[in-house]
Amino acid sequence: MDNTYKNRIPIILTLIFEIIVLITAVTTLFSAKWGDLALCGLAFVCLFLPFIISAILKNRNIYLPPSFKLVSVIFIFSAQYLGEIINFYTMFWWWDLLLHGVFGYYATLTGFYLIKGNLNKSAESTEIRFILFKIVFAFSLAITLGTLWEIFEYLGDYFIKTSMAAGGLEDTMTDLMIKLVGATIYSAIYYFREKSTLNT
Image (cartoon, rainbow, N blue to C red; front, side, top):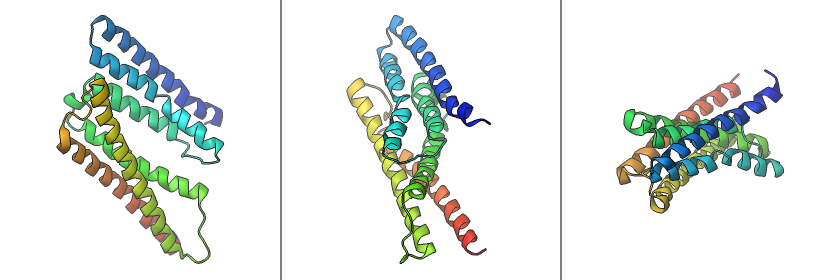
């Protein structure tokens, strides 16, 4: 597939999602569903964030995975629009778990990608030690980002009266543990893949 076309896919998908969110916002406005209207506004803004983050980091020669914008846009739409507004969280008990698991997995992948493009192994470090360092960094990044997402949900509930963290402490801890599972799975895959490469 042509790179130009591949680069357009996240943009096209974002425009489609934004149109869907805007149409939903108009319908919620006329039906006076103010909570859903606030969620539409939040989703509309958040869908632009992957592009803003990518642009800022690119200007500093820090590169994210090629799929970052696409995956992030799909995740945001799935979490905020499908999950909160369309009530997938209520309709499908596994929806929340799926998203948080994917979040932990992909955030860890992103951590490895950041190291690959911006940090080199020193002469004093062994290969296995450098692999373990990358795992610790990427795993920690995933858990940190997961924690920030939980804070984002809490602030959304506090300021615009959403119900993203309505499950309370149990919901938050479950989300974090699922992210941890996703991060652990990718870290284990990376470790055994890299270790097998060293042995060949």
